[in-house]
Image 1 (cartoon, rainbow, N blue to C red):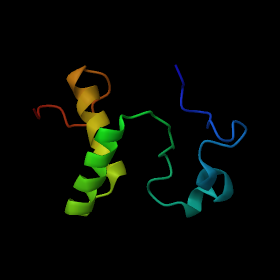
Image 2: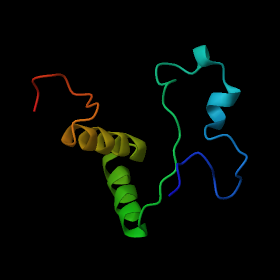
Image 3: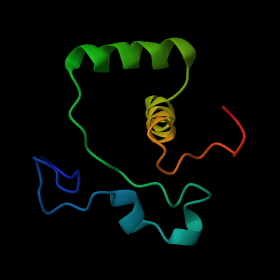
Image 4: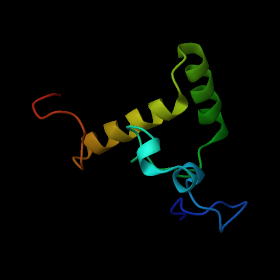
Length: 85
């Protein structure tokens, strides 16, 4: 199982080049966002790309929403406010 910290093309490369090259105060409000690597079936990638193209919402936004939903579903660090369902 891969932990997402290494790239198969360049194992020594940092996981987030932007974070290592840009001062923290210059990155803006999303400075705490990190890069990760996951393996996804080609069919899902194609569907996600098409959805993002059609809706003009970045794939990364959809993926962050999916992670939030999963964390909420399994009760581990959901970002929704208490009392919302």
